[in-house]
Structures are given as structure tokens and as C-alpha cells.
Picture 1 (cartoon, rainbow, N blue to C red):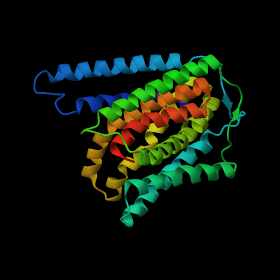
Picture 2: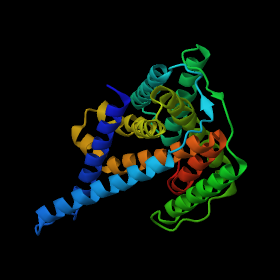
Picture 3: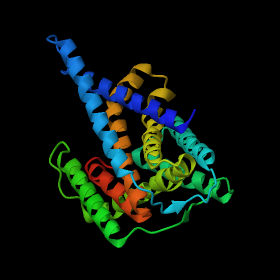
Picture 4: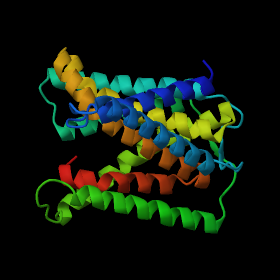
Length: 292
């Protein structure tokens, strides 16, 4: 299957998931005018996707590239690396469940082990090679995108914090000193895998900036799926699996959309520091509100 066909099928699947997510929400489809509501929702979904893809096409325009795989097609190797990461995380979750040691902190440790050891093994063995820097963006471009990216991420994080249920007090300094480095490290590891390695490899393979950003963002969203479905799958609880799928669908769509933003920032700046800090900021409000 070609990258373009894969992108088309992924776009259709995302549109269908978005439509299903909207119409399956309680209270959306009532007894009156159901056909009209279904039709209006379909038109709305198609409109949103049309505008989104047009915006992505404009955002990924141009020809400047800041990192290169030096004409080595590493897409397959990086794909296997991501599959291995998912398998290791799922296996670790299963072992922890068997030992009755499933806690948020232990699961976070399982994530860090998989996201560090597996990529390190692929890179040290030579199966995946670190890309080389080929150019730098202009200072004004970098400053402007830093300002927009960090500002938008900070606003998003503040909304996530302020909209959390209940009255939240400012987190103590001790918790901040623990949480902030953990969130930054987790964001950096994900950005290395999905933007620095995968998106760069996709750009080299396809020659399309649009496809590279879109496909790496879909992969970024899919990467989070096994962890969400681990519990019902390990216990063969199909009713719980349906409930988790229904509740997780909006989060998956949101993660994919945020991946598009991070992908554009990486494409336009080539700055690992910027995408890592923006990613961490996007997560910070929710983490401080709900915990690791």
C-alpha cells in the first residue's frame, strides 16, 4: 500500500470516528428529527475535515528541510521500533497486572523503560540511525513559532487545569519539582520517536511534507491506544472494552490533532527543544489536575 493511499484510508477512518463520536454522545440524537441531525452532523464533520486538511496543506507548504536521513530509507525499521515499543509496554502492563502492581507511577516507569531501552537498542544496533542536521531556520521564524507554540500550549494547559472538576489549589513546590521533569522527559521521548525519527523518515520516503506530518500524527495517536485497552483485553472483558473505546475516542482524535501541530512545528523549525517543551506544556495542566 502506498503512503498516499494509507493517508487517504486514515483520513476516512478519522472522519468516520469523529462522526461516530459526535452522534453517539448522550442527548445528541433525540426522537425528533433524527435524519436531519444525522445529516447535519455529517455535513459538519466533512466541513471540519475539509478546513483542517486545507489548513494543514498550507502549514506544511514550502521546501525547507532541517534534518535528513541522508537518503537512507529507515521507515520500515522505525515502524518496527514503534511496534516493539508498544509490545514491550503492553507486556510490561500484563506482567504488572499479574503481580497486582498496577499503579500510575509503576505504569509511568513501564512507559519510560519501553520508550528509552527499545529506541536505544535500535539505534545502538544500527537498525535505526539518528538523522543529521542539514540547515537551521531563520531567527525571526524560530522566534515567531516559539512565541505562537509556547503561548498556545500554555493557554491550552491553563484551560485543562482550570476546567478540572472541583476546586484545585496551586500545586506545592515539592510536587512541581517532581512532576515537571517527568512530564518534560516523557514528552521528549515521544517527540524523538514520532517527530525526529518517524516524521523525518516519512519525509525522506514520500517526499511529501503533508503526508509526513499527517501519517506521523496518526501513528502518534495510535501509539496511545494499547495502553488504554490493556486492562479490558487482558481480562477479556468485552463490555469494558466497548466502554473504554467509546470514552477514549475523543482523546484519540485530540492526540492526533495535537500531533499535527507538533509535526508542523518540527517541520518548520527542526528544533527538538521547542517541540519537547510545547508537548510538555500541552500535558502539564492535565497532569497537575489529575496526577501522573
